[in-house]
Length: 340
Image 1 (tube, rainbow, N blue to C red):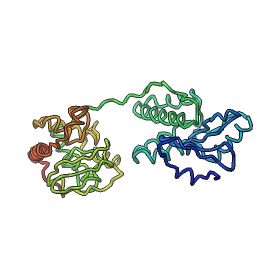
Image 2 (cartoon, one colour; image 1 turned 135 degrees about the horizontal axis):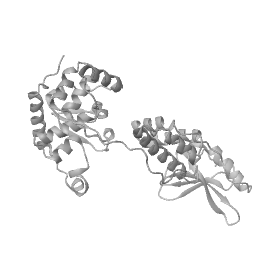
Image 3 (cartoon, rainbow, N blue to C red; image 1 turned 180 degrees about the vertical axis):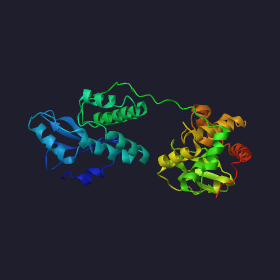
Image 4 (cartoon, rainbow, N blue to C red; image 1 turned 45 degrees about the horizontal axis):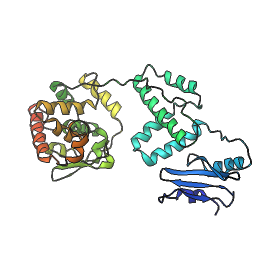
């Protein structure tokens, strides 16, 4: 049969390196691997198989053209610019990664130069030396993209392979004091941003996971598909937090945080610092570290490795006790009643 995009797109790995050849161009076809689909061509009397490139990074039309060149004994090279390849990389990421990751790659790869030249890429990165956090993210995104290009046969080698990440993201240690926490709480109103910030203070969860919380019998659950570590997360939740659910999606964190800072005159703190403050205050109240990690859905630390694999106890009763103690403490600070 003549190979078509629809036929190739629907091919599935069935336990062997299956080959399908094209009736329209003898000795040209595709080979199905567990890791994906590659275009191949059989060359010479020895019928030596040569891989042309990966689908869909290389289109069927381009692969057929290249196969014809090879069969005619011409040199092998299909010029591709980074700009034309990035869209294929992002399509691959959309099938594999979370939307937030794809969004970050799309933003960062807009900075990628339209050249595979090592010095050009390095010059692009060096322009961000004054912002080490952004430089770190750019370097990582560039490396992931270039390694994908090598894996898919688009370029022979990563031009910045071995480059150490020059950006350094400072490790934050900011923990809000009781007075600062109270100042923030009292400055909040009744809008979506304020309700979400209250939920972060009350539960210690990640802000991107709030809208996925559901509650049954005072137990909150965030499905694995919506958590950072791809693990289901269940934890007890008090009446105060429940009254703020369901959380609504919100995109104006930056502007709203800036207005909050102007109202409170607090400096040098981030929304994520609320999660660190939550953990620190639990420690102050005597909550064991493994219970804090369960509340935060951490898989490192005391619940990592063998302990995480074999210990399937939920610690729900212990978490409930810690949750009640924490909410009572918040009430003692004056944070127990939502302002209207």
